Image (tube, rainbow, N blue to C red):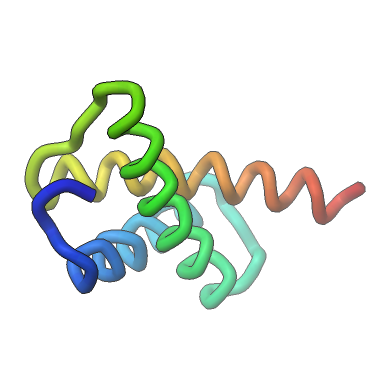
Length: 82
């Protein structure tokens, strides 16, 4: 996550996890969604850096983190069902 630092990444991830749970209608539990949000934010920051997609500022990082968290929540649901 460019420009927000370690603590900022955690905060962005928590917000992204909450937003992603609302978008997906996830019923995994708040803690699971928040953890997936943090991991999704970190994942998007890493993947975006490799693809040349760098989020700028807090809003850009929250949007990117939410995208990563939505992907992880969907994958988590698919793995949980099987």
